[in-house]
Length: 175
Image (cartoon, rainbow, N blue to C red; front, side, top):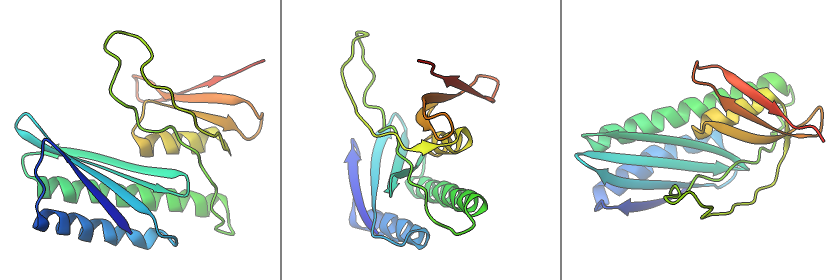
């Protein structure tokens, strides 16, 4: 697994990068192909923050942790990713007895929020057919509040979203 490490307001050093690569490499057991992990380290106030994103065949796994000790954040982040990957693998095995992978498309990570209320970024992405349950799983792995997907049963574009009460909502389009 290839690991790209970026520091924002954070100076990286060899021992830290080596630790990150070692921890992320352990997650390679979940994938058959060579994939890339993107790690962003930053310093916010008095806390260090790590954001890890792994794009594997159109499915995104993402974890974000912050705390006083960057090494503790690395451990928590990789544990979160391992948990997401195991959960995802279990869902696929349960749904598809032949273990064939289903390709998920995803919403790219959000850029900086617009300050003046205008559109500052435009992103395009392909929609892959999936069920609402699979869309919720993908949304949770991305740690997003909503997810746009193509419903495999109705062939329409739908949105799942996380409600304030902890449940999920589904918006269906009609045309």
